[in-house]
Image (cartoon, rainbow, N blue to C red; front, side, top):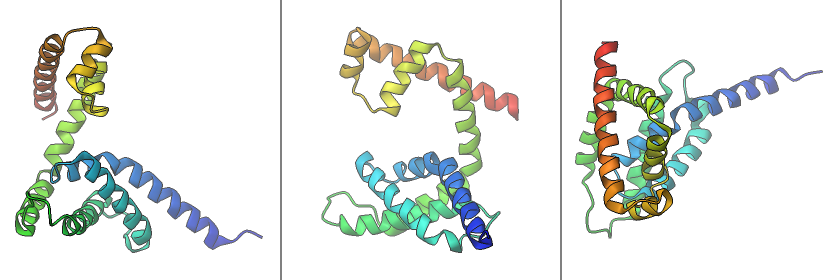
Length: 179
């Protein structure tokens, strides 16, 4: 005999994995907007993922997982901050709460811009997309990219600047067309 609760549990696990996968980048960007250290963001994101998993039974199906996960991330970031109080530059809780409220209000605009960015990245030539990936996905320094691309650092800076301008214009045009 099959256990009907086992099948419900499997569906719930699959739902969690799907929702978390769809929102990992958003959670990361949300945390990066409030924290200055990429390694710390990754640590807080891992803690956030654990809390999301432990608390997933309290998540209401068909409600806004992105908003819920960002609230959890915000609370995990605050807990991390309490551990880091000896750091010289620490933002107040009220400032971070105001920042979080502003970020929440900008979600739809962010989603439109992110969608447009993804479309614009697909349109880039391969070498330009590779440059963006090295710099922003992998966090490589300009000197490292220059060695990899067999170019001077100044040439890489100029190319990166042109690609960013091109992406910015493309994003703006894409958003205007979709409006």
